[in-house]
Amino acid sequence: MRSPAELGHVHWHDLTHAHGPAEDVPELIRALYADDDAAGEAIHELYGTIHHQGTVYPASAPAVPFLAHAVLHVPGRSDALLVLLAVLADHDPQDAESPSWQGSSAAAICAELARVLPDLLPCLDDADRAVRRAALRVVAAVADRLPAGVRATAERRVEELYATDPVAAVRADALVALDRFGRGAEAFDSPFPEVRLAAAVLAAERSGPPYEQRTVGVLAEDGSEPEPGDDAFPWAGTTSQEDRLTDLLTRDADAGLTAAARWIAAGDLGARGSRLVRRIAETWRDREPEAVALTLAALPHQRDARAAAHCLTAIGEWTERLPEPAADLRDALYDHARGEGETAAPALLALVRSRDPRALDLVLRNPGPETLGAAASSFPEAADRLVPPIRRTLAAGATGNGAIALIGALERCGAAARQAQPELLDCLRTRRAAVVAARRIGRAGIVTPETTALLHDAARSTDSSLSAAAAVAHHQLTGAAETALRVFEDLLAAPGPVHWHLSGLQPLGSAAAPLLPLIEPLLTARYEWTRMAAAEAHHTVTGSPERAVPILAALIGPTPVGLCALRALASIGRIPEELRPTLRSFASSPLRLLPATPFAEVHPDEELRTLARTLLARD
Image (cartoon, rainbow, N blue to C red; front, side, top):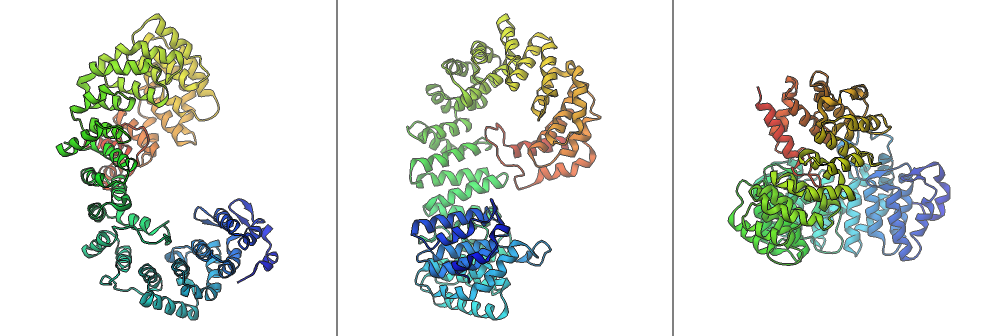
């Protein structure tokens, strides 16, 4: 250990941390010995400098002996400083001998911590359970790096805690530390649920999924309650034991749903069961039926309206993927949707997506942009009833995402949507959701002098997205390409990313041929989004797939740009044979390959799987 008096012996100015030179580290370490507020702030700053978002730096290891001294000499901060030391030393023992480990900052930290560990072992006997737990965390962090003599002493002390500590949570932590020493212990029959749970977690980590039935039973039985005490304790790779358990159970969907069902039946304490269900539904495909049923069961257990609203929002996200939403689900949603307060809106949206006929009257009674859009999708036969409230809401001055959602709803209203042209023209005139309004007018607008004049004016906008959308719409209504060609010539020649402008060329078709000299160089652009959009545009303009297909095929993958490339290939209708194994993996993966994205009408992973299956079905 080293005292603050020795800080000047380290050349901190030659070392770096997350924000550059480490000259401020001595000041932060000295602040640990000041008043309580200053010490707390210093610990917070050390997390942002020598340990920043899981990364360690050259200045981190030299700080270790000074932090160890502070553990023993700063009253009331021992547990927080011990956890900082443990977090600094986090590493995967299986990677300890890899070339990347040797000479790394992590290796230096572990070496320093192993040297000072004998001085820290008395913390295992501290009267404060939080200090004992944090000390166990430090021992576990470097268990695989200790010299033989220190290892034997540390292991013996940990074993004593496991056998005798009066706090069950400390015994459970000692079991985890013993596991890091290679001492597997069969503790499923322990009288302490915390110890049984730790044993089950260790067993599941060792075996990997699918977990044994006995292990799942313990995880479900003993994991239902939040950990007692104020010292929520982060083990390696997690921020709390709950996070660790949730991550573990998410890896095995069947085990996770079994545990979540048990936790929800026990009262869904801390919303742990319903939160686990959401994680599983976000991670695995085709789990919506179980997810909806369990979240519905969790709904009465939520402690406040906000928590209940979260459950209803989740149900709304999954319900439209159910082939036939059950009557009890629809009745529960209807009851909440008729009420007031925070739960009414998400319940109504979920009810609409469940395609319950009662939802339509509720939407018309209290129309909102999101529910009107969902109703237009769920009840296309009701377009004549939905268009009037959409028009009224737009006319009342809807802006932003609300106006965008209303115009999107018109897309699903068929011929009835043409009644809303006055409101769309007003959006264009007042620049409210003007880009989507221009696109909608171009696809299904009525040609009038006012319409073409407004589009022509918008095509001269300094907003490049609006000028592009208006120019294309002008061409769609008039058949004249001059305005669009002029706008896109300027946009494609401008510096910076142009892929979103390339994607807007599709409605022009072969009329965009004069732009080919600008499009063709972009086929080899460094930015993958630009190559994708240029390939799609080249096929749109020329009608030939020869240059587009190889470029698009090379981009296919479980990424946003890969999905867009797959969508473009599907529209072309040509799939290279060598792409079929990749498509089969997209079609058959039980895991979601793409996460949800805000405002997407279809979950990207669902679209990826559907496109893959459609393309594989083609000869």
